[in-house]
Length: 229
Image 1 (tube, one colour):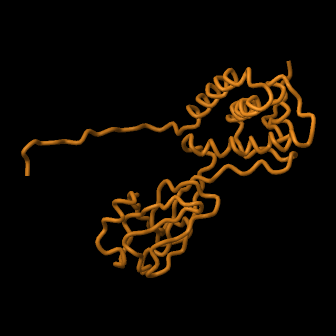
Image 2: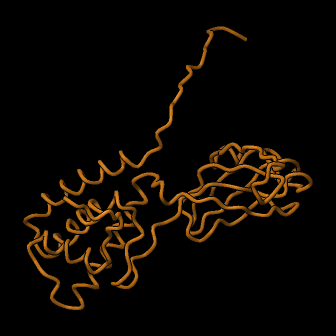
Image 3: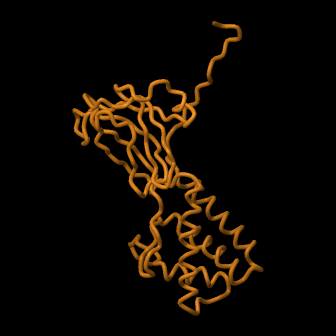
């Protein structure tokens, strides 16, 4: 038996809505139904921002440092900044030197005594505003390390027009459709809402478990000596 030898299956927004409605035993009969479903899909994508890190949305960014400037705005699509470092170059050449920065909390940053002191940055604090900002300590003098580089989690793109495909990897297609069916059922068929919720949570749990990095983890216990100086 021949196989397709293709790996391109995807759904556009219209097909996602149709599948979700069919799971609710209903049809999208009007333009308002489509608009309402697309709104629910965008809300679902926002809800996924509370479900952890989605690896396909992790991107890197390079910010040129300005001497005496400690705070920089992240790209407008940023959800959070994962890890950061300062670099001698904006590129990835063999001569580039990178120094990792430690992420600190707001309280830790507030406790720093002299936030305006200039030198080589060693720590950073992220203000998770509508457009997140990253603040460095010490304030860079930009003499050696001229660029701030970091990995950040991007927001999932809006659904947009109905002929678009969703900004979702194939692993998350099942839970995306199940989630939209759950959201739609609250509007058109509340009797199956709980059922759809269980299906959605099960699909999402499997997708999140799969969406990880297969690397070894080493845990070293911290030593503690009572009465030690």
